[in-house]
Length: 563
Image 1 (tube, rainbow, N blue to C red):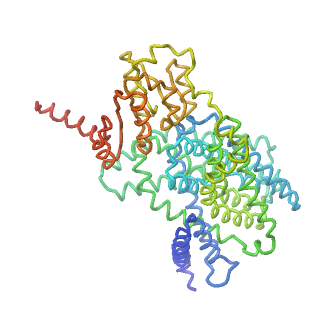
Image 2: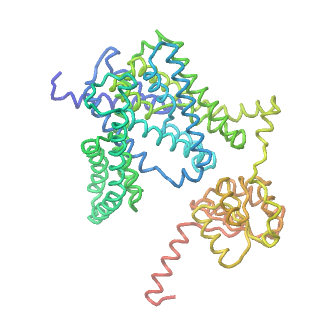
């Protein structure tokens, strides 16, 4: 084939087969990532037929890594992490440590070195952001408390993996890598110098980038050109990643990650995420295809027990660790099962780690093939794990008293303390949800000395509120016990400040049953739901967009002296 069209043929074959097999995977209720990896296997050197250019595919995958990490940075939220930090931080650290030790033990059994086993174990320890978010979103669990715990857990995993990516190159030779030593410095000096370089890059991004990038996007947005805005976002991601590597010896992945984090601070972050999404998705596909090209299908036939052992570490080992940690923090069995199922897979970070390990001579090609085989299987069966949660919980609770007790265990913040003043428990407002809207309502109630009790799913928020002297109970307010603990029977008003209206009727029914004359105030973002709630005459219903339009209209009319 003419060398001049090698790039085109590689992209055409990669996209074409990824589309076909991604579609097939979705039809079978699997993640499209499975299809992309299969497409890469088919155009790789280990299968007959067309063979794509591995060198070009590798460079395209580097762009894919940059844009993937840029996307992770754009969606990285310190607030989301801090909301569940007490379980997410220790949970992620313990689970990653446990999975890494299992990987090291397994590789030691096969005769691998410690360095090889360490990279292998670390690759098995980190779950896929793409798979997790899509799984939670498809089940409507992304904004639930269980979803927030899992996402916070994954954020910690991502941060720890980024730290590993930074420290791995200077430690490569100590771990048995084959990269030539280019410095005579002691190891500790090399590590310190590496960390100083990273710190210098981060400092520049936070001090200069945090001001420069929003300023740049503001002026680009003023032109009104969508193409220029998209170009600014993508060129910023790739440009910062390249400069970070060239000037600070920071990996492309880390550079792109911090570019996304800094851009998130801009008021244009949502638009930046939206405009860059098609290109990020396209190159992410090429990344997974290029990873699939490294897979050796013979490993499944030649080493089936090894493949099963790796899958067991991911699906069983990680799940057991996640369940144990979640239960140890006194969360119910249902939450533990959801967290376990969510993290029982591996994906893009595993491939990035494994690829770096191979480039440093720390991971044999056999290791990459085992990781890929396990990724394919774990991603494929992940939907089945989610589907099995409720049946498994029902069976387990039925046959085990311990499991039954774990499901019904008492949340230490699910009851108001006896010391709560009586003034809060007579004619009070029961405020469901303490998010952006709930906080503003609570502040106004405080300023006007109106008593209220907060019902909030996030246990850490409840603990924080109690420290401030604000009465609060932990739990889902759609469950009658939560509203009972908030003393709904004595309340004058129920205010549902959460945007999710799925369970609002349960809340209203409980409130009306225990306090027939109670006033109900609801919010929604959905116009259809707004109309239905209004027709049912449940109470006062507020639509976000309508209230915003009213406020803006009043201001406009006031400027013109109109009524």
